[in-house]
Image (cartoon, rainbow, N blue to C red; front, side, top):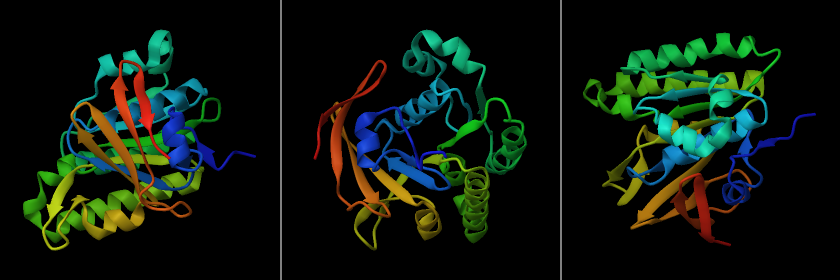
Length: 228
């Protein structure tokens, strides 16, 4: 029987999440630019690849091969063969690539897909905000499809999100409105303070909000500084 949780590649982040990424659910990480979102995605992807799985990785902001090699180490070449990388150019392509992912998952009899990543799910969405509610509906449809894949094939989905200032509630929030917030079973907020980053739990089914740890970004991933 498969464990309910899948390692993120970071013991500190696994602890924060109560054991790792939850299968059959979407985990969202949001934060300002350069706060460490992509690094956490790559750590989780490499951990899944190291476990012998394939990984589907949709990157809307430019995949860093150099960073992938740093985190993968000597196994980078082997891991690259099992990393299915998609780089959509627009919001419509993003939706098509999420839908196309199912074909790759079905071919996983020998090396199953162990993780779905979308980094960042709202970068291309942000360019189409002028279209109003239709864009929000399209994003919701894409996330419902992603969640459907996670549930159908018993794998975790990990997404990153950009931030904006919610004037009405006087707080920083993730883009995508309440729809994206509700569909994400777990949400982590990243904060950047000079060279130190903080990962804080914003939403979780069984752990209290506000749990956090501080970390530094290193050549091979992250290093925990403090936390409960």
